Length: 317
Image 1 (cartoon, rainbow, N blue to C red):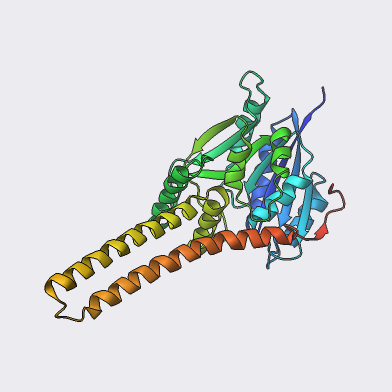
Image 2 (image 1 turned 30 degrees about the vertical axis):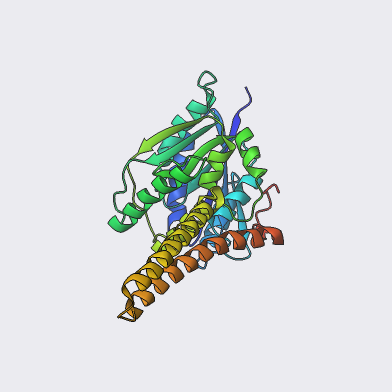
């Protein structure tokens, strides 16, 4: 019987402390999985600590471990894409090194994909709570999912993690999407395929600090909205129409009032308020249009999603 291979991709940015702990945990899990072989692909996303050194140690210690090191920080999306490109397994998984993605779920995920009667191409995970997160971040995260699901044709599941195990067919479909501005949560939904969701309670980092500040999460949310819906452009157009109608009505009111009652006051305070309001709406709409133009501009440049500086000798490009 030929063993199937499971490729696990781990995107790392300054995970020097977490990486050895992650390796220990995932090694324990695969020791009990005799029917599959492990391929562990570690992607160093331009770390500034000794993450790459730890990767090299693990690669020398275990020939199942392979690593890719970027020339600089290209972001998690680029790291995941690089890992998907290098993966050779029958099933390919995405995980974080901080153990917020519990390796103990992997046997169940493999079992579900192996069951042909279920016919799943992907087993994904979602958190049922946001324990340990700042309340303000949790609030805006929930609002983001509600907003984008109302505007976009691609459904995004609230609490969804990047942690998932996919069939090779689904991975190949994702690799066909070579866009520079990537929002993987949306791409996973875009390609389709039957997905089974596993729920678990939020787990805090085993070591190190989160790399996702509120500002980075906000930018990531904007990326997702711009990448998978043009509804903001429609909203901007509707706002323009509404304010044109309001302006037309106000002109008629002002002319009528002046003819009938005169204009005893200059009315400059109300005029300034109206100018500020209309100018704010115009700038808001221009900002929306600018976001879409900037994404188009970056896509037309055809720049590489990532640049590899160094890889292990056993990596397959």
